[in-house]
Length: 619
Image: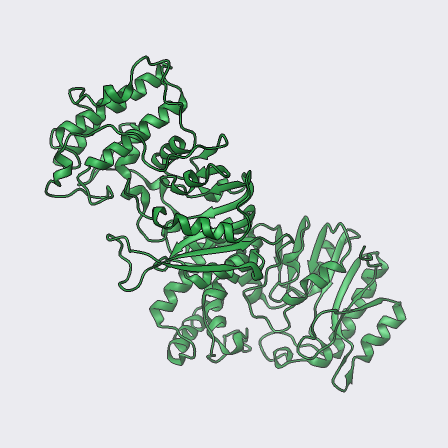
């Protein structure tokens, strides 16, 4: 059967890749998540236990027929169905005849004879199944045979989104009822076949190898193969338009939509409970090679990444750009450890690279985590506990993080891409940048869109979040912008944030005291007194930091300690020729524990944390 994206021509390269990785292990479980016509699953069923899935029912039928075929005896039937169905006189003027042939419509999908034979065969298969003359395996196999047979006489260019306006000679030949095509391979297992959305199914399956072969163009398979769906289901659907298409809105794939595919792909990789991930994609696909690799490297071991580029003939009906066309193969081994997520805000003083250090030295069994000076929210978001509390005096950043949590990530992505295109934003493009900055600032404060602020941050100087005393954004243009790396960071961060129970505040930290009890862990990352940057000078629309503020915080932490509340304070004791004597004396006075950061020095600063509890020893 002709099928968009079929892997018949590269199946040998897929097998060679698997063998080269030393994962061609007997009895491994192999999940073909977008099975299509089951080319890949059928090829490997003699070696692996196969789990297969496709959202289209017609693909589900074909996959069932190939992965779990019947014994071909049809013992309850007492007749040979192939002999019966190849009798050209057996005809019924049913749904296909009346709607997809000139016998009952203006549509030229099938000759009248072939359409009537399709109706007869499909009706008879259903009758046999309902009367229990054939079992489920035989049922799916015979429908699959019908789909294969139909493909040989359909008056189309290979897909069913439209029919030809003149008769292809092969469409006028009597249809032969043939057996399912493909390699004749004996399987070792009873394989699992699903007809679900992969985004939902991925949570419920597990195994050794996940193989992804998603759609890569904007062509929806449900539209291109609507007629095969109708024949497979034979449910007499309401149809419309010149092509007689059924309603396939419920089968629309996110993988054929920009933005949707980026979010869906990241979610699948994040949730995949498989040790090895292999993916085939196209150089003409909606997702870029860089984006795919960024996602794989976040959730997989970067050193195991394999990329192969295979020359491939382009699907002729594709709207892809002219030029060289390649099929991509990716491989990565998933990480064993928990994943940390870096904020999509390039926040000055952000602690994304120190998260593991903090987690290693945090107390066990945290119920509530409060990030008193949340900033870009690199730290708190990576802790797993019942409740996370974010707080920062900068209410604009708080609003932006709330947007990341509450708004649909796909819509955020699409908004950014739309605005970039509309205004012609580019690295260092001053004129376009000033236009969107003016658009943001002329809007009344309560109506300003946090997504537009994020766009300004991305294209602004050093991606700083800077305002004047009127809260107008006043950062000049910079040499940065929105790219595949940032897109992956944004999408993965938003998903993780949405999965957490987070409350957001923008107030003085002392006003959160009512949320703090002995089951609360408080993390503090205030501005560092001896390394203060211009962003803490109190002239950016928000309060600055000085010695008085430092004293106030230390006194507050001391009261928390007296209440039995555990805390962690990030800071530095010395920097260049300066010492934070106030902090040094406070630590000594209270006999708090100081732990030096054991990673690479950050910005030539020797970071420390101060804790008021015993840190567990590594075993």
